[in-house]
Structure formats: C-alpha cells, structure tokens
Length: 293
Length: 323
Image (tube, rainbow over all chains, first blue to last red; front, side, top):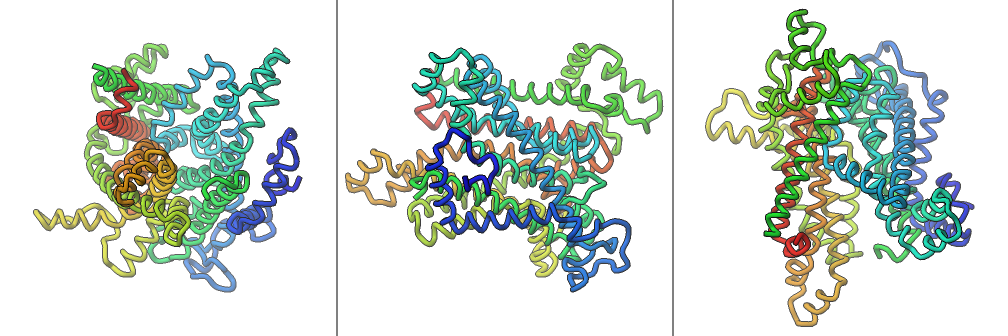
C-alpha cells in the first residue's frame, strides 16, 4: 500500500501486495531514488503553494537587474520583477503542462499499444504511424503547430501530447505484444469473449510498471519541450514559465550581464529532469534487483 | 540481388516518410484553426499579390485538388515566399542549411568519437569508480536543457574568459585561412554544448549493450581461446554493441539533435536554420516555418536512410535477413 505514496497509480489491484511492498522496501534503500523523490516533492510543493510563497510577478519594479539579495533571493529581471517569484510561478506552469501533456500522451499511447497488441489489424496501422512519426524531427513540427494555432497553455499541452504518444506506444507495444502471446492470455480467451476484459485484466497490469516509468520520463521530456517552445517565444505570453524567463532574458539582452536570470530557471529545469530520470532508474532497480548489477 | 532489394526497400521507406511529413504539414495548414490563406499569404500584402498567391496555391478549390497542387509545387522545390524577407523560402533555407549541417555534423562526430570509447571503458570496469563517474556525468548531461548549457558556456568561456567568440559563425572581413580559423573558433562553444547534451545517451547505450554481449558464449569462447581481453572487448564485443548505437544515432537526430540545434543556434545567433526558425517565429513567417520543418525532415530521413544502408552493407545478418 505504501507505494501509493510515491505514485498514485502505482498499484494495480491485481498485484499481490507482497511484491509491491518489496519494491517499496528496496526503493527506500536507494539513496538516489529517495533524494530524487524529495527534490520532486519540493518542486511540486513550490508549484502548489506558489500563491503563498510569492506574489504573482506583474507590472514593473523599481529595482532593475539587481543581483540576488535578502529582499530578492534570485535577483530581479530587466523589468524589476522578482526572479524568485517568476521561478515559483514558473514551476506551477511547467508542472501543469508536464502533467497534463504526459497524462494525455500516456492514456492515448497505452490505449493504442494494448488494443493494437490484441487486434493484429489495428497493430499494423499503429505500427506504421508510430514508425513514421518517430522518424521525423519533433521540435520543428511542434513549432509549426504552436505558431499556427497561437501560443496558449492549452495549445502547448496538446501539441506536446500529440507528438509524445508515439514514443509511449513504441515502448508499451513491444511489451504488450509479448504478453498477448502468453499461455495465460490464451486461457483467458477460453473463459470470455470480451477482449476489453482480457485487456483490462491481463494486458494492462502486465505493462503497468512500464507505464509508470513512461509517465515520469514523458513528463520530464514534456518539461524540456515546453521550455524549448517558450524559449523560442512560443510559450503562453500570459503565464510565467521557466522557458519564458529565459526567453525574456534573451529578448532583453540581459543574458550575459545578469547571470542570475538564466541560472535559476535553468537549475529548476535541470533538477526536475534529473530527479525524474533518477526516480525511474531507482524504481526499475527496486522492481528488478538483478538488473544492472 | 537481395542486397539491392534491401537498399530499394529502405529508399522506399524514406520516400514514404517524406510523403508522410508533407501530408501532415498540408493537413495541419488546412485543418488547424487559423486562416490557411493567412498562413500562405500575409494580410500585409497588397490584394493583388494576395489573390495571386491564393490562386497559385489553389486555396479556393477543394481539398484534394489543393493537395495535388501542393505536392506539385513542392516537387518543383517551391516552398512559397517568406513574407518577412520577401525572397523564396527555398533560397533563404539554402543559405542557412550549410551552417546547420556543419554544426550538427561536427557535434555528431565528436560525440561518437568520445561516447563510444567512454562507454567501452565504463562497461569493462562495470561497478568501479570510473564507471560510476562516467554514469553520473552521462545522466547529468542528459538532464540539461540545451539553452541552459549553451548560456553557461557562453558566459564562462565567451564573456568571462574571452577564449571564444560569443555569437555568429565567422568574423566578418577575414579571408582565406584566417576565415576558416574564425569559423572554427565560432564553432567550438555551440558544438560543445550539443556534445555535452548528447554524450550521455551514447555512453549509456554502448555500456549496457556491451555488458550484455560480454556475457555471451562467443565472448567466453574467445577468452577461453586465450585472446587478450582488450582485443575481445574492442573487436569482438564492441562490434555487436554498435548495432543499437547506430539505431540510437537515428533516433537521437529526430528527437534531440534537430531540436537542440534550433535552440543552440538561437543562443549563439548562429546563422543556421534554427536561428531562421527563431526569427520566423518572432515575425510569424509561416512559409519559413513550414519550409524549415520539411527541409529538416528531409535531411533527417536521408541521413537515416544512408546510415541504415551503410550498416546493411557492413552487417552480414541484414543481407541474410532480407533475402
């Protein structure tokens, strides 16, 4: 049950409690995994508690481009706004985009993968689309769509989701394909005529660990994509995000003189992505202790 | 015979991928919210030019007719006019493409040249101190946001130490050897940024696949035959570990290299396609954005195709498999 603390969907009901509590027990012994969990918790806290941590940065301040001090922990930008407030509110935006985009990509990608694995005809089509999409450069495509539709938070979420699901499908599909060939799935076919039941009862639980890792990795990649789009001027112009802080600094030509402007949002992105990577590695190791040792 | 079949099949896949990219772009331009006429022809243009452009692209006709016309225009290399620069998009992109290819090419070669040996060394001392250091560096590098590392290097080596120029691709007013030197010195920082971000994926892939192949029977046999460990490692085991690495290069190019180069060119005001995209975003120059995507997609597909074919020529299993 303890696994639910780290990841809400961690425990499919079918898993014997013993196995997953063993995962959690081993996970707790991975120092890097625990550190990653703490870092992520701090960032999520900053995102949730942003209104209590800092006032929303807007308008103009009187102290322009001032280095970090007691009054402004992360310094001020070229409009005199507090960079700490921008980073905290940026965490809110960045995590929102990451969570929403990865959720959509995971649900859609997994659905296509498991349904495809079960129905061969669907699989052929899905496989070709995934192959073709994965052999195209993603960022220019995202840029084109975001520019056409016009940058807003909703646009960015859907654009990132739309080009993230093929990777999820690719990973989940290969696992799902090997599961549907298992004898116990054949046995299930004798018991029921409902593919939906077999997929829900047998295929989805079997790919669940992969999905969990995928959620974390897709979300961290979404943060990078969103920051990249924002850095090119395609972020939501009405909301602060980590990428937008960098974009505004670049636009104001303040990047080279005020080192604190790029430093703090960069650190935030770096910590988030690094923590996500370490968390998924530690989870993999804890789930399968023989691996990689 | 089977070899030709393999090459032909691979070329067919490349063509299919490019067709897919073109079709996706066409559908996006026509079906996404936003006036398609606006996407092709700017409202800033005079009504005559606008009407002519709309007619040229057949925007008053049905979707299938438009699609055929669109394909026809692209086959003739017509990507439309850039409305901020008032020159054909194709010409603008062709001026930028060599710089981007230079940057990506050098970065890729350096990454592979460092990444593979590092991965081999890490795998051969798995669990040791060196292995752990290499792994930490690899994972850290992978988590970097490209502009962040670009700005950091620019700040330290460009501004504080003054070792390298902070932007552009060459020093204006230099000729001959001096010009080449200036190109080289402008290349160092953006290239290094790309290498640092890419390196981790190569090191970790080589490491894990090598460790797998080191446990296989033919390696045990080679060792039992008394071959020196170094030879077994670098010749016998590494050869098989290179297949996933080649696949990785292709995937990396699609997902990160192209994205990374767009961002890094923006940081360093490098006159390649990435910088062109940044300028086009600022001016909402849709024909340039569309052309840039199609061109980059084309380059990526062709590079992947060549890599696969060369690999197929080198790897006996591919020949057997395709017959």
